[in-house]
Image 1 (cartoon, protein in one colour):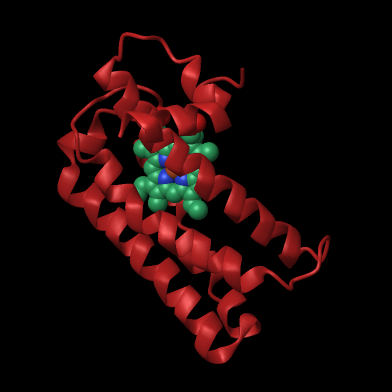
Image 2 (cartoon, rainbow, N blue to C red; image 1 turned 135 degrees about the vertical axis):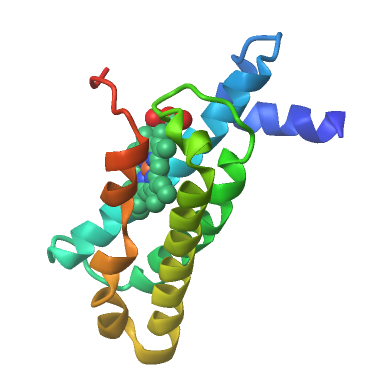
Length: 147
Ligand code: HEC
């Protein structure tokens, strides 16, 4: 285990500059933010493809990546750790928040499945409904000023 961690540290310098004392709450917040950033990057490339700025050869992989990442998101919010840009309502309205996150995971999974079964055009027609990012953010995220 230690060897594996050292190997990981050697390849990802970022992990090693983390403070020696682990702040559990900080880790929880960073974990869910990393997941959100992954979603953000994958949604951004799908946007580039839709606008015709880049070729669509990889689009099915990007839709798979969105679906896979979305499926990990709810778990990341399960620990009740307010902070970051998450509003306290995430946990005080947990039934609604988790419903939205599950729905988001379901819709992105359906979009990826459509891509495999019916092709990219049929899948891309579902993009606006599947990427309910803004709906959730309007209610549950307090966006801080850009750094
Ligand atoms: C069901 C709710 C929900 C959905 C769906 C959702 N988000 Fe989020 N998102 C949040 C919450 C809550 C935060 C605040 C997290 C924190 O700072 O602790 C957040 C934060 C973020 C952040 C900031 C991360 C950071 O580093 O501070 C980005 C970027 C983001 N979301 C992108 C997306 C994108 C893109 C999608 C859709 C493809 C999406 N989100 C879907 C709830 C959601």
